[in-house]
Amino acid sequence: MSNIAGRVREVFRGDQRVDADALIARLDAVRRFLTAVDGLLPDADLVPAHTLVERAGTRLALSRDHTVVALAGATGSGKSSLFNALAQLELSPVGVRRPTTGVTHACVWGPLEGANHLLDWIGVLPRHRFVRESALDADDETALHGLILLDLPDFDSVQRSHRLEVDRLLGLVDQVVWVVDPQKYADRVIHDSYLREFHRHREVTLVVLNQADRLPPAEVPRVLDDLRRLLDTDGLTGVPLLATTAIDPAGMVGLRNALERTVAERQAALRRLAGDVDTVVAGLDELVGSARPAGGPDDTAVNGLNRALAGAAGVPAVTEAVERAYRHRAGAATGWPVVRGWRRLRPDPLRRLHLPGPTGDQADPAESLVAATSVPDPTAAQRSALGLAIRAVADRAAADLPAAWPGAVTSAARSRLGDLPDALDRTIAGTDLGLDRRPLWWRFVGGVQWLVTLAAVVGLGWLVLGYALRALGLPALDNPMVGQVPLPTVLLLGGLLAGLLVAALTRPVVRWAARRARARADQRLTARVAQVGDEYVLTPVRIVLSSYAQARDALRDAARR
Ligand SMILES: Nc1nc2c(ncn2[C@@H]2O[C@H](COP(=O)(O)OP(=O)(O)O)[C@@H](O)[C@H]2O)c(=O)[nH]1
Ligand SMILES: [Mg+2]
Image (cartoon, rainbow, N blue to C red):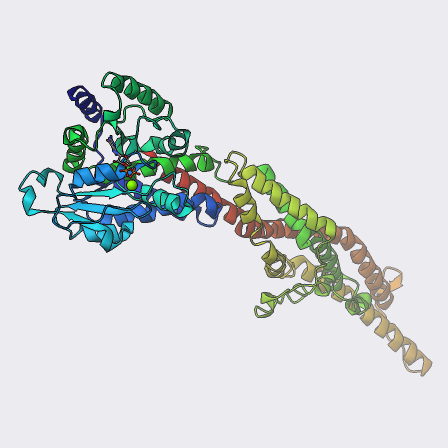
């Protein structure tokens, strides 16, 4: 016995204390993780983390002076016998029935207050709660004050409800004492389904080989060694392992001592939760990894997106219209006055797209809430090019992320796809295309055209007047001469010729200026369309990337013991 107790002490010496504040900080980190990934990762993957946050919050809010220890094991291993022996219920004046299988019984050492809330939460019915506070005990039970011992149903029960109850309770208790017996200690069920699952809860796991009295004394160490080897394979290296005999008080000393230490340390609840955090973090690790993603998609993908957006928004059609509108408006302002009116009859190319007309009037702001322009809708090819460009942006942005994330990034990139057409249209309608002001040189050339036309008209009038006077036999006008030619003729022909000449000279200048106007409009529209892409596609992507970074940092904090 002393040998075994010595081994137990050695293991306990290796245990580290869990700081309550550090544990609370780790739980906060898990909470931050959950906030960061909310709506981005599949809910099913987050259930353990949500459960942990809720359970841990409640457990820490409930009595920390109590330690809930469960006796768990297969049918007939001796859980109830150990429970009765420790609680000495047979001696108790309460005179209770022997606990029956299938129902969890609890025994509380010390006062029930505080323990009752804990037992309400754990779900042990009041009529299955016993108090180990007896006048007969005197002071020899004080070392266990604060212990709440549970006798769990058999985990290998044929009744599914019993097994579910065991699983539920194993998730809530602070420490588990696994009870095995010499016949069944190597059973696969207990190792594969239970002990192995508890490898992150080594610090709150204790294994007892009960019914040690059934073995020849010389066999006990050999069986314990064999069991120790199995526990090592379960990942439970170093957990306390001791032999017990429920029917002999002397065979209970080791277990009692271990429980007294657990109760005195007040650490089991914290260690259990710390183990839970470890388990949850390990489960989430694959989901988050340690990738350090770029701040967003690369320039190539963004440029591709902007091109596709410009195509879908009809930017080429608008810039083409800008060029034609420039020529149209410049022609109307600088053309030969004789044909100007005729030009004005033709519709303005920008007006046709319901874009700001020749007077520079902006689209009505109320109207701009709905499709504002008549720019042609994107073709199927443009639509699919946009879809591909958005996909490329998402793919590039999510390239370094773990498998759970690219889906979230793609959804984010496409999240506002439905709003894009209107947003693009409003942007096109609201963009200053640079045609508002009439260039000074138009006015100058227009003025020159008026002057030369006026000259021609004056010449014509003068000539007509001269002919009329002559026809009526009145004294003729005395025409001043320019060289050999009379002045009115010079005015008329010179004016007409000058008008045609100015118009001819102006035309290439107008063409060149129209191309410049088109380039300017293209620049402005592309920049505005890129802003829309930023707002509707890139920003949602960046939000997911920053959520990823937050989740990764939070998980790293949660992992830090
Ligand atoms: N010899 C011996 N028998 C025991 C010991 N512990 C339990 N038993 C017997 O094993 C049987 C099953 O015990 P029980 O406590 O009901 O097991 P449970 O199903 O795990 O609750 C009962 O007949 C007990 O008397 C022990 O340490 N030594
Ligand atoms: Mg039992």
